[in-house]
Length: 299
Image 1 (cartoon, rainbow, N blue to C red):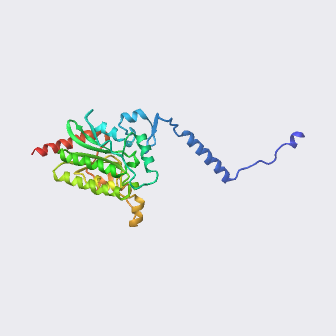
Image 2 (tube, rainbow, N blue to C red):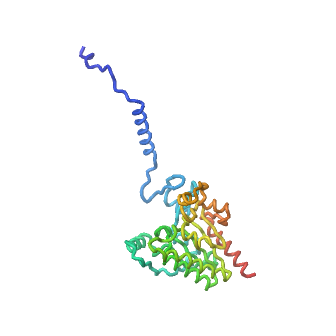
Image 3 (cartoon, rainbow, N blue to C red):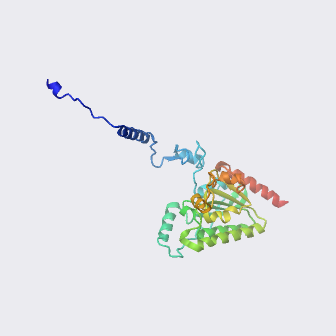
């Protein structure tokens, strides 16, 4: 009798809506549980395929994903060590320091913090060295430093490198990686576009070789000046190359843009880039180009 008194005759039921909510929550929880747990410092996640990669393995592959061939960004000194003969690189103008000529708020502190964090004084490293014994001037931009933006010192260092190459009768290779002109320096930043281009014109007048190597990203005022002036223009796979962003262009022209139109592969297809070179082949490719130019110069 007592048993019958406490027996439930009705049960709580969930509506279809609440059932779906429970199911969705369960699925999302399972998805989070299945995501790779990546400890700090030991593993990195590929931005393209999402694979968890052991950091040392990526470094052995010259910062390239072994699974999908995604090219991670590399700093200036790492790139120089990949390309130049060991011990041959002599850096120029390391002591040039950026000044806040327009009194832009917090600009000095930002520069100081970046110098401490990156170990470089500005967004480009310049100098001279050998590639398989062929002496070459090189400038390598570093996107870690204010997205590789071009201010007065970046423009000055690149211009000096070009002028030195002209005086020494040497080829120059410039690796670009930039978000464009540096807004904190206003018109002074924009002036570097003309200054670097004029220096390259004088270098070209002497019949000397300029190889422009576009890496991810190469945009804005750098694209609109020295990046696209190379006698030979090379690029890394999937590098973002353009002037303005796709949203700005689409709103301006009022047309839908082709998919991937600012990628290196699209530019190669349409004649803006001469060749796409994987990182492991950069040194050998540059050596072949320099060798051919050296032989042509003798004729």
